[in-house]
Image (tube, rainbow, N blue to C red; front, side, top):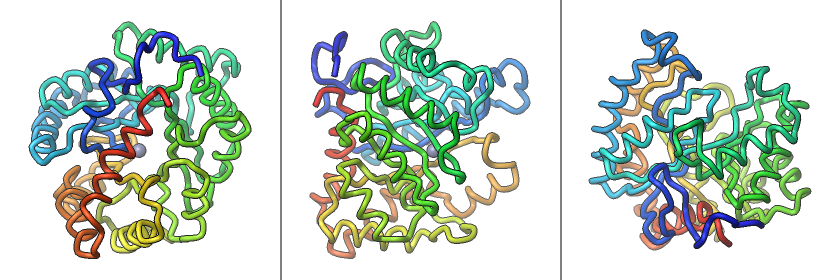
Length: 327
Ligand SMILES: [Zn+2]
């Protein structure tokens, strides 16, 4: 691993490097605004950047007061990542924000048609020199596969992400379709590159209710994210919030607290994913927003005799271990 320009062990936030022990209680998979690149200028009637920023400042301020000191924003460029927005939000609220390079699984042709070498270089350029001309550097590489599993294009993105990780040490966080157990195929790729899997987080794993699958992920050495922990009417096989918390408690009880994450995959405004009416319904069902874990899940776990120390491991130590670039 070439740590090159990083002089010490560090976590990279939008404000710059942060010592690992300063990270604090962390939500490792969230979003704030998710639209599309360029929408701010082209379609301000869809983007609403400034209104969302004001709302986000209020909500992140409350989050900080509640004890959440850091948030990973896993929004990639193609779903409207806005590093300056995140910097303004971090400065106003005091919450450390870690932003992402990488890409979503629905990839624009201008990007997907680049070669693996070119894509690797683009990821590394953002990590080493910053996003666009902002100077703001990402602290994670996000890559994703959809319900169909790997396509030629997403496979190429995972190979590029693996190479960018090996070059820079920046950890990799993923989007999976857990009901299809696609996390296992992702791990195979990373493993094939010889990546230490403690640098990898398999996202959206709580969409599976198969404990055997979840234990397989945990046994791999990767971090396993329960990152959709909020109440909403789920479709099909997707477990409801009660089952998710129950499964989390089973894994904790089985000795896996060292590799678990808790987050919401929440957003304040996401026209890329939620039509207006569904967005309103989502907020009605989860009026706590980013506070649901602190207000409801943590008390529930404590009621199940999970120790505070274990919760701290999941919410403080694990994200710090994962995000820290020197291991
Ligand atoms: Zn997400």
